[in-house]
Each structure stands twice: as C-alpha cells, then as structure tokens.
Length: 402
Image: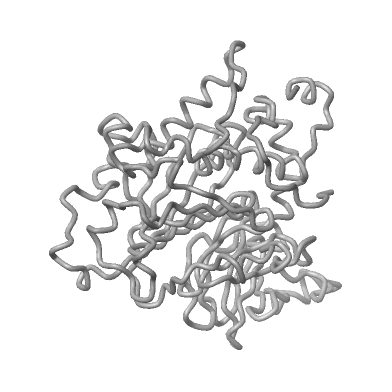
C-alpha cells in the first residue's frame, strides 16, 4: 500500500534496478499495484457536448466508456458487457437511447449504467437479477478541460487528493474553447513506459538531443516543482524561445512566459502548455518493453493565424507514419522515411533514444552511471513514487538496485 509521498530529492540517483524496465513479473506488479488504482487522462470535456456523447478510451489495461448523461454529468463505465464480456463500443459516438451490446443486445442506462433490458428475458433468463448486472463503474475527475478516469468506482485516493493541490498552485490558464485540434498522433515505442516518462522529466538532454527541434532550453533555464506526486517544470521566462514566434498566441495566455510548461501527472499522463499551443498525452503500457504515446494538441484556428508568423519549416509530423480510419496518425521508427534525428519531430527523437536505451538494458555491461545534479533529480523522485506503490520485495531486485 502506498505510504506518504516521497520528499523532493536533494541529489540524483538511480533507484530502480534495470530489471524493472524489462521484467514481465515487475510489469504485472505495476498493473496490479499501481495502474489499477491510478488516475489517467482520458479525453476533454469538449469531446462530449451533447447528452449521450461518449468516448471509448483505453485506461491502461481497462477499456472504458466516458459518457455525458442527460443531466449533463460525466460518467465512466467499463466497456465490457456483463453477459459474455464483449467490448460494447469500438469507436466514439452517441448513445442517448442506451448503451447496447452488439452481441446479444443487452442494454444499459446511460445515466447510471444499470441493466435496462435484454431480449427474451423471461424465456432465456427467468431468474435473472438485473439489478446486480449493471456495467462496472469507474470514477471521473476534471481539471480545466481535462477528464481523468480511475478504473475503480471508489478510488483509494479521490481526485482532489490525487491532484495534491495542483488546481490551486500550478494551474494552466488555457481553455480549449475556440481552439482548433490538430490531428491526434500515436507514437509506438519499443521501450518500457517508464523510459519515456523519465525522458520527459530529463532536462539534461534538451539542448543536445533536441538541438534542431526544441533548441533548448539549457538546464540553467529550467526548474521543477513537486506537486503531490506530480512533476511540473518550466523554463526561465527571460529565455528566448525561437519557436513560439512562428504562431499566433492563444488569447488570455501570458506571452511573457514563452517556454512550454510540462506537467507529468503521476504515473503516466501529462500536459504541455505554452502561449501558442496546449497538448495532453497519455503513455499506455503495452508490455514490459512496449508502450505508446497518445498525443492531442490544440492551437488557434488556421484562419486566425498571422500569415507573417508562418513557420519556415514543415509540420514536424508531415510525411511520417500513416493515418488510420480513426483519424489518428500512427508513427513508429519503422514507418519513418528518414532517420529519426532527421524527422524534425522531437517526439520521434525521444522515441528513438528511448528505444536505443531499452536495447542497451540487456547488455551485461549496462549499469546506470552517475546522474546530473541539475536536470535529472526529477527522475529520482519519479522512481521513489513508483517504489511507494511497487516496493522492491524480491531479494534479487533489491540486490540489483544496490
């Protein structure tokens, strides 16, 4: 069981042994002891404008439905029929007349998930107790326009407790109303999910791996705060951001602070915000050495962009990956038409370096070296929070960490 939130570390050190990044047994423990009780970004309130509008989302291993009820509330149900376990919804849509399983037409109420009806009930199920067979429920939390889901009906930590004061101390000023969403992107990684999270928190690499894309900021221009179990970083407002000058600022956002603010919601969701865009993402763990990043981004509509600010380089994801029927662009290293470091996409650069790091973990010579006193202490804090949920109980794991 999780204990008190670890304090912000005073020095950087690797706490997790490398086996935690490829062990199948450890991966199963993470799902049972961490993800089964975590809050994860699912969608935004603008996705559900009308009663019955729903999103079919993947919350780690849990297929979930996020739906707006007739009274305007937002509910979360597990996307699994209580009859034969069939996935009810494959795609987003509207179910104002009821949540209907495609297999045997069992029908559930939108407002509370209760079982409303089924064909041939008196003949096929004369003794059925319908009140016991409603959809399993999850929990909903909303911050800003973001909707988070917990797979438990009664979470161990309620949403406000989990936020740890984020709403009061580090809230972003963005509203998605009036903004235009770019095409969602899914990046498929051949790496452990924690490798990506730690890369996102690593400020030491920005000026080197991303010198042609993010162009900094250097570690002197960064600082980070611990908020609950979450991590927030932002660059020095006095630093020059050469990218933001290419786009029209979002009204109401302070343009004197040009660098994006990065929020890492523990364990595997996040936000990137700046005067010119707002992004939200989730890292979905697929296996011990596979995960994917789902990224959604909003900006000012194209027709409201200042032509004088038009960027001189093409969109970073143009020409990479492929577009599926769900409207998303899917990108992986093997779908690139160039080397990752020539892609003009910092996420692809991160994906590539995470995969390079993952490969090296299997070398008998690989052992974590010293960590940067400035730029990598957040990794230590992230790992301490992991260990609070999934302790090193196995003696072999403990020895590997020492």
